[in-house]
Length: 297
Image 1: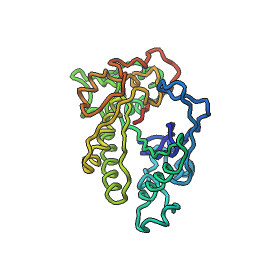
Image 2: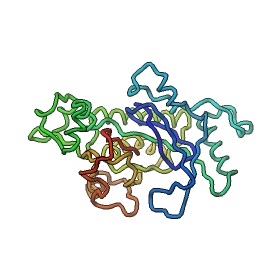
Image 3: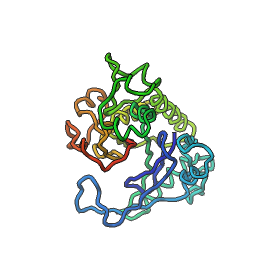
Image 4: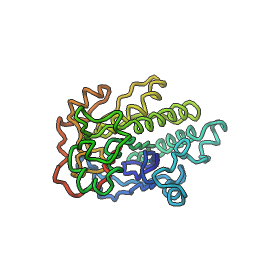
């Protein structure tokens, strides 16, 4: 598991993703940047609060290990730091409690048009398409990513898939591919961490959860946050957002399932207003993407 770049409407972001390059880039938008969801006339400028979390970019660049295997930092890499309000609070407060108080103070004292938020960003676990992509190498982008699936005898040996994937005809499909066993275990591992961090360190659980409509992201969201929300007496009620995708390519792994299928298989999830039955964003002939097919929640 590792950290990947973040683009969000935020003042400070917590980065945490699965198996991606350890690069953290928080973009600062210009005054002319418009919100992408049709809120015409509203303009934003984004900045970040520094020196609150480990610099994953720097650590990744200096790491002697593979960028794809750099470990997730305990408590998401929050740094030990004193804040002004700590002088009036308990010296035994955890670092997360201190940060929570600091953010609350910033929001109390800032101008009315300014808002500070902490956002946890998680990449989905390992999916069917990731397994096939690793197995076929450069041929993924050239051939296999453009079709919906293949027979097992057409592909290299795929031990990760043989036990739990494939239909009765021995065909593997990766359209809106689900998590494989390893991907579900990655999500469960982070779920255990969340429960531990919440109990021992007071890491705040999200007030709102948004998720990509891709099934691998829906599964990851459900697995990660189910336990910690239940322990805190809250039901998991993520909001499925159509535009919450890292990229769109002509790869079939970027095409989501119909809304009715998502409703049936993830009944605790809600849809943003206007969410359509079919994926109207994906185009088979689109050529402006790359071959990573990664999404976020």
